Length: 392
Image 1 (tube, rainbow, N blue to C red):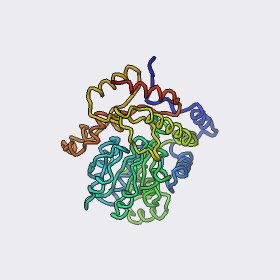
Image 2: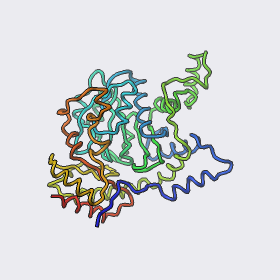
Image 3: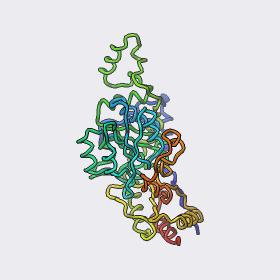
Image 4: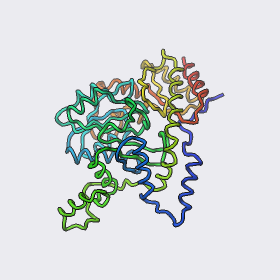
């Protein structure tokens, strides 16, 4: 009997759909573009995360883009330290904001950038560190946070894959000057499509609101901002002053209703995922697979599977075994593996010296992830481990 294990089962429930239906049935007919429900979801998300402000956008990619444009506006041109193991939108957000990505290798114990390499990469051109918390793992440490603060280097957290993960019992996304979340279908919770920019900084919050909607000052909630820009541009009508090179990154009321329905179940679903992940790591053959991940505070929506050794034959047999058992997987862990091997980056930056990135390259060729979702029963996780361990 095959396992028939998908990467994700539908995490949008009938209860979520009914919430949307009830909203649409209201009389008078509700406004569907960004309005009161979006504001309600922003407030609820801020309370859950433990931050002052949240700005709901149409994707995690949009959140990434807004955060990097804000870094450019506040700190000017320069370099942003980024991982090669991340989603494509992180790197493109840096480049499209007119900043230069500077890559450092990752730490295989948590898959985020190695802290010593981050600190060694900082120079006079550094404008920010853009850290991705990969597949539910925490990438922060006291050393990293203290050194960044000491050197006055802003931290931006990409938490698109790590909703609810913590460092020292404080949720990831509440440490940096900004953080970004994604509510894509496969992530910890879904708004169909959607994302969030979060911050405790009032100025960043106002800028994020403007960048979300074409850069228009009318999106600011601070009247002083509107007054200042209007006074400096008396030839323009205040309702059509575009302060920043923004986009239309607005989400909709339907997406917000979905988010408000899903959010109350997030913590309970995360616990199920965490329990499953611990069963998975305990059940793996440590002679074949790397299991020494730092799991404290983690919240993984995927099972991270990494060969200890660069054994191409074992890797091919593993792929065959998973395919035979209809176990859906993704190679290279997050984002398809080493971004430095992607054609868009080679065209933009030229071919890089990949010998400087041995960890991410090992993950690229010998790393996988397998779906971990709230409806997955523990006995199926145990069966999965038996299948993986049977590979000779």
